[in-house]
Length: 434
Image 1: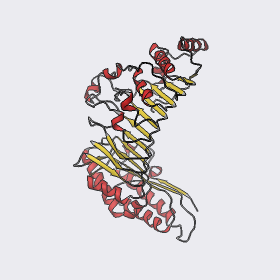
Image 2: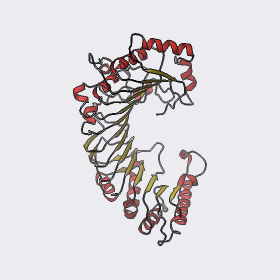
Image 3: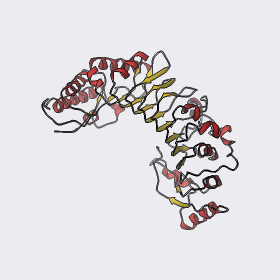
Image 4: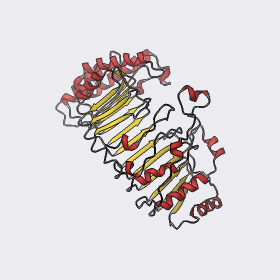
């Protein structure tokens, strides 16, 4: 009678870090996973009228238990009503994974895939990581998995061609994280509404858009390396005319977005309602973000997080070794100037996470207040910090802590301004891993 079934191989692993797991540990965990899957699915009668609304299976690739797991699921799909089915497929090698490991694990995945096409054909969500496939193999996966609605690729790569083309009639959520593709072309995804693209190594734009008429929510994260070109959002997202939410994460490094004129930026972003700019380095100016305000006339909320996440950043010679930019400030960004007389009538909320009692922040807030004539609320949050670095954050923070200091900051911000906007201080520490 169960309507939701979730079986996770991690529950059957020894209680220690994944990097310490042995091959025997994984074989035993997968064998127990197979036993649990059979025990639950094979005892359900074909005459039962109970629908499985969601089924989630997580297991390891590459041992003798993998194919029987897929076959058990295929049999259940043939005899039961399953509304949503998900595979999260883990690999034995994840830490220090070499190109040879990726190829080996890619071959193991295709052997599993070819042995269980009916199971993959019934999936609605697929999570893959640490594999390398050929272009034709990716196309085969997209073709067989014709019911797929959510695809998550993590640290995957492709042999031969450097361009991955994706065509799929059902996918509405696509996540590509830390993959080695030179470029991804979203050729035809008529139901895609959510796109997340995290990290790329190529010098040029990481992806291009074809037919994506319903795309609404876009999240892009990258560490701006010194050899990478700056991204023009109008070119990257210009073919998506329905975007309403945009999230950009700079990981406390170089700003990799190139500010653009109103004429270039406004056409693809006229429906934009919410923008979040995460992890802007404390070395960077904020005035460049005004180009988004100028180019998105219907924007209602703008959120900016400013921080240097010390425990995740590279320092000294390690920056050069990994191709990090020496300067987090980019000349083209620093010299951006807001258009004279610019007014914005839709922005209602400005939120700054990582506010500091510094001229840079006060000047920026006043610039937004001057332009956004209908601004109602400003929220100023304390600098975020994770558990490992929050002591250092608090030592260097100039966030106003006392009522008297907050009143002084409010007066400084409102000086010379006619806007009746409410200014709120929020002391709670937010996660630094956003």
